[in-house]
Amino acid sequence: MAYFDAASAAPLHPVARQALLASLDEGWADPARLYREGRRARLLLDAAREAMAECVGCRPDA
Image (tube, rainbow, N blue to C red; front, side, top):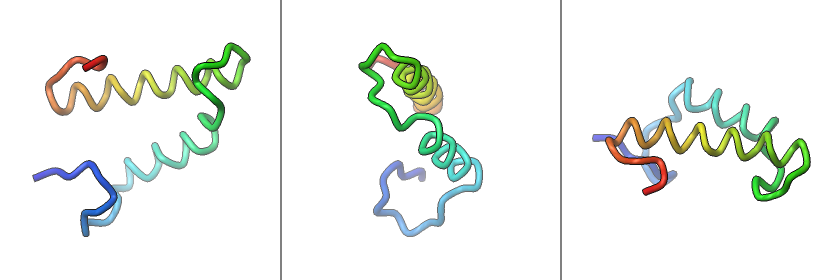
């Protein structure tokens, strides 16, 4: 069974860790803003939503 919260006892998967670190480095800005960093954060957020939606079999906007 997969858990998507921080309360699970399993260590962070290396791919998930890499994605987390990349988001902290590149996606720190407010994704609702129009400046360059905000647009980059929005792209990262949308990509993460699409990836998770595909994993669980739902729409990214659900």
